[in-house]
Image (cartoon, rainbow over all chains, first blue to last red; front, side, top):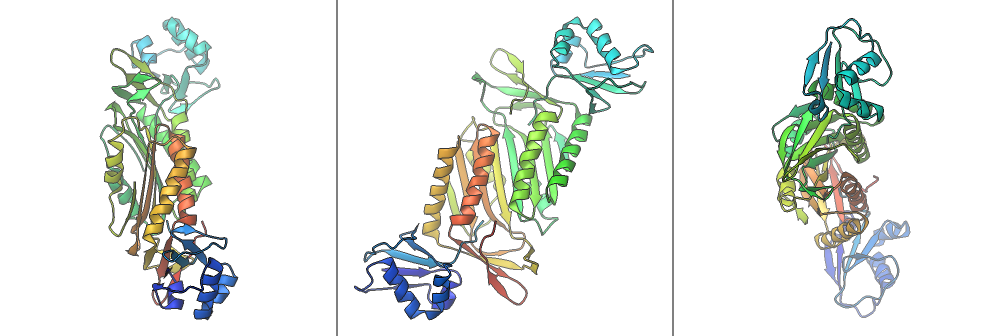
Length: 81
Length: 81
Length: 138
Length: 138
């Protein structure tokens, strides 16, 4: 699966995107655990519910199953317009 | 005083404007009487409160005194925009 | 700024000419009214818009002042055409300039309401074989 | 129509290109957002607007569809820029085309609300010696 980071999130991850080939990450909750273990500075933002998640360009709040070819985006609140 | 007619009112009066030099017309009510006697077809529109009056470019509903140099406009409901 | 004119206008230019004077403008809301091809189930070919120009300026100035008293506005533009206007022609432009969106939106809507109710313009609508004077409903 | 682009745009042209397709359009409401020189009491020099383009198209299409289901709309245009934008630059244009005024006004306002809440754009605001990522408040 592909994970994309936007705005100041990518200043924490130092990556705009990364490819993940893991059989352990089966759902969004597991992905969240994975990214905060890899990028501990993201934890407080996840805890404060600042992070938004999109799976295949759709906002996702609940824990859903992830498939191999999914594109998961992680970003802060939007500020367009 | 100058009286100006707009839109379909001037199809009834056949004038866009007329100058009135009368000492008898001292207020708006007297002017209304004068124009419906001169243009009887206006009477029903006055009775149905379709006619609007402006004195010196201000909407006037009450009966106000008129002065010699006043400009009085008579017109139907507006339809701009 | 209030303009009452026969000529057409370019809205981008008109807006830019005001916007460029104020770097604190963040929000610009515009309404443009056009002559439609159909009104009250009749095929419109053109309209003739009559104006009481002196009074129109006076009333539109008052409308703008009322808007200034209600919202935080930086500038305000009204262009209203008169004369013969064929189908698809622009009739009116109202643009409100402010820092934030709500002020420009609400004031633009308010000015249009007021303009339709009080500004001394009259539309004579021309169909194929007849014509009709309108009065505003909305 | 939805356009996500770096380039500036001419609002009169963009509106005309849609208006000319529909003679029943009588009402066109537009909102243009600009980069202001001041935000939260800081002097802004420019912004850098980041976009998740694929998702932005998807979300904006949904916003437009929701507006269509609520109002009688003839057409709808959203142009949203991204990249580096200096003070006074246009950021966004939302234009709603309808027969009557209320539909175009309410839908334009609704789309702007929604766009600010859900469309995946992020502003990085640049001041003289620092910069800051924003999140929408209004």
